[in-house]
Amino acid sequence: SSASSSTFWRGDGAWAAAGGAMTLLNSTTATGLSAVNYDNFSATYDVYKLIGSSNPGSNNAETRLQVRKSGSNDTSSNYRYIFMSAEATSGSSSHSTTRGWGAGSIQITAGSSYSSSHPTVFDITIYNPFDSTKQTAMTVHTGFYYPSNSTWYSWSGSVWCDSTTGGDNTGISLFSSAGTVDNAKMALYGVQK
Image (cartoon, rainbow, N blue to C red; front, side, top):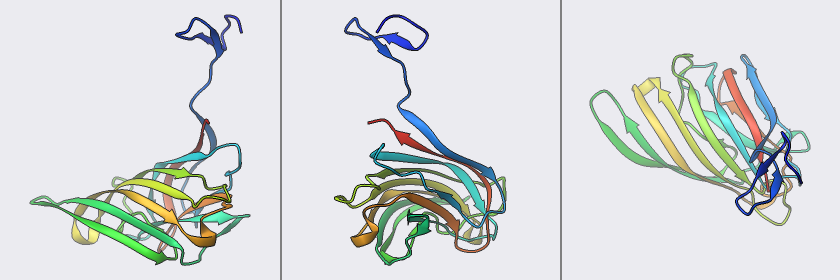
């Protein structure tokens, strides 16, 4: 390569093509959705990032995830997750764990506020979803306000999709346990190999 607006000078003294570490595959800015479905997993990337915020349309509803296969959610009871939880109220703080084993979906909040001033935020990394030889795994970080007990939460943990749920996934779905997905501002990225 030679110098141009699409190259950069590497530390070893060679010109290389410029490019980002992540590629935007899909994004959503909307409200009143039954779910946010992204069917963008392929052999092009091994790792994906789902980053964003939303609110449930129904107060105190949980935000959940399921992987997708050929345009449909995988609802089988093969989801396993464990999250460390830090909780804070106006007068105290504590910590605990939240888990699911053989669950039909991945619960990423205990319940969330429907108020747009209290968005649920999330940063989810998805590993090898399209690979038929590996079980899909995820690391999940969420922050949310749960109005029924006036508590702010920070969850951090991991997910394992077992059995047939684990491989050959073509997408992911984010939805609410009750009502719609509101104030959605999120994006799915493919991480460069």
